Length: 418
Ligand SMILES: C[S@@+](CC[C@H](N)C(=O)[O-])C[C@H]1O[C@@H](n2cnc3c(N)ncnc32)[C@H](O)[C@@H]1O
Image 1 (cartoon, helix red, strand yellow):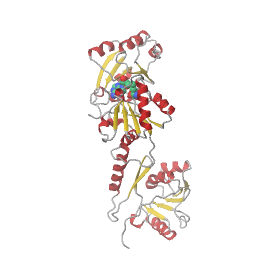
Image 2: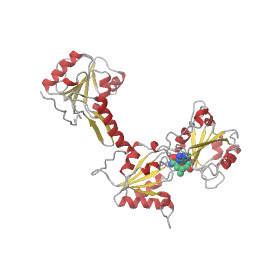
Image 3: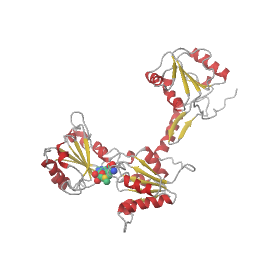
Image 4: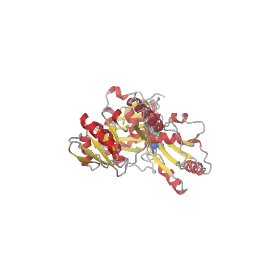
């Protein structure tokens, strides 16, 4: 018989009998997808790996603890033959052939009537790659193609615009602390699909340069606000662009809900009847200390961390922060937006009981090529900030965790130079 390439097809297995022979590594790799496809999976095997056993224990598959016998493939729609016994595999695939059951054979692809493609998923699509070269099958090559396509779709370097299902609206996307590699896969994909991007000063600004020329990029800080508050003007800009049927991304630094006014924007969009999706981001409150070699918790040192806004001083009547109570905690304090007020914050903490020798680290422009770390104590930080000319944006970490890293980790290079 002439060799032809395999015909690609998607099997709809919901509720249909699928027989898997052999409970080893092959079954372990293939079972999750068969379960996800809704197949009524029956595993026939005297033994199984612990992971496969867990699937049976969880009721995801039915496990018959025995060897294959003639007739097991009766009524099956699909079979995966993967026992360690070549002779049993041959008998099973002969039975599959007689009963017209499409079957994959792990030990001999030539004898199989079906091949498993290299598959991957990205937001609503399955990418499946099969070789057309029947004799020279190269599973690593097909897997590499699959990886390249899925990776490209995820990070937006491969842009496949939606034509039917895409609904206009706004995505509030947390862009992470600044390093363009630290945005989520979903955030990056939405960015690649956007018509309009309204971006903050903080966050992965380098990604904006990669956007195609037709994408309108608007600097949130430059939206004229005349008789409105700046935030109201941003809300209006989001609403206006979405009403024009455009896909709008509101790109924010860190996470949209950590001192990011994300919920205010969500409310404004909801009131205007505009669909909005929120994509979490890596907050600078944890990632920037980490990038400077500081874990916000450490066994035996800090069992809690508290993230506080320092944009108003402790004695300011607008402050909602209970500084006297924070001073009594022994864990880590992370202060955002606190560069200008850190001297007064340190005084308040010491006045209410925190040791003046408590270590403090200020990390400016964390995760970017300009990252810089300056160390001090509560007693010295006010003066150090002035002397070292520390500027926003900076994350300030207060607590013993500042000193738990090895010396070399205290001044690490950012992960990706720009
Ligand atoms: C308005 S808040 C937004 C926080 C953001 N939503 C988040 O989750 O990271 C801005 C503050 O975050 C901190 N920040 C954000 N990105 C930073 C970075 N790359 N390096 C240092 N501090 C940063 C600074 O304290 C800055 O003043």
